[in-house]
Length: 413
Ligand code: ATP
Ligand code: MG
Image (tube, rainbow, N blue to C red):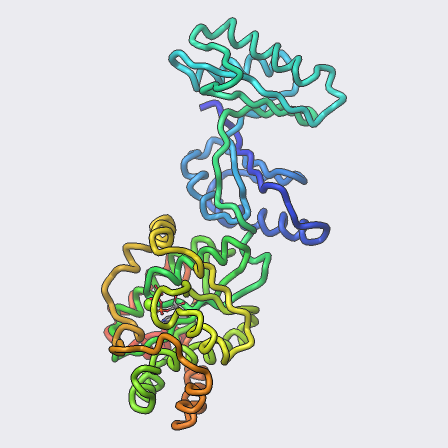
């Protein structure tokens, strides 16, 4: 294969000045981490990044680029000397590789270097003429060509390419600061985490676990989902916080009327998540709520639940419908894990008629009937935190213990 580099574009930067510098710096670091172990070389120029392939497997490099947020598109390119004779022969060689049968094509030239003796049009004409004369299967079609051969002249270099592949887009993860993702074992929250990272937000994850009311497998599922998300993280690692939620769960079942159980459970989750976010220097909470999806996600519910915290809450999926969410879930390889049927604390107890328009004052009245504060404080204090690497082989079930004990043991190793 003739291609020797990948040209990486990051689109029109709306960021200015210092932020732009930070963006580029992050993007470079992120790419370097994702390419670790490969012999590629990354060249940073002010408006582009070039990956020198150095004979590495191009498929492998491209696959890794799929995990880098902040890249708008990329192209496989052949770099050669900015000299008309070299450009002509390189273009012919490339077209011979791309077009083995009858193909229509056109040439398009861009010139960063205005001092170059030939104008763009002249280069286009010279190269197209040469390639046509030496490659009988090619025909010119300037309106709807099957192949467009792009030529970019920059200083002493020339880049030739024929495809532009759309990449993840967004901003380099981390550039926007850090948020705390409320991660259940379902379909939505991992997708919400992915979208937040895509938009530049680094994440830590919190999971409310109610073992032994719920199974160890439901906690393992969360670990496995975090492993998938870690592939997008700045250092391929994400911190996961397991909050012991059983006591609160039991207290809710005992002291709160059934129709308000879910609402108040979620208010407890928001309270705890906010305290953790504060501790971990996270600037926002992130969750997988989508307007109208279930009783706890009506706008009235959201308002009542939201009332307990001042943290901004990102709901990347708030306007998505389920079909689109599932498509994204598959894209990030979480779907098969998410649909594994292990119950979490939301599914272990489902009230028959949850309030769809719960009121703030009613919640406050119910919450006064039992002193939840010590339980909330205790849950925060007994939260167990672990760092999950994309290649982690952590298997909770093998240890055959309650999650709490397992995590505690791991932490103290
Ligand atoms: P998901 O598919 O992400 O589970 P869902 O549609 O089932 O979402 P809910 O169960 O109402 O919705 O939860 C809404 C959001 O609350 C979830 O997307 C997640 O962000 C958060 N959440 C729910 N349960 C937990 C949990 N046990 N631990 C952490 N966060 C949770
Ligand atoms: Mg759920």
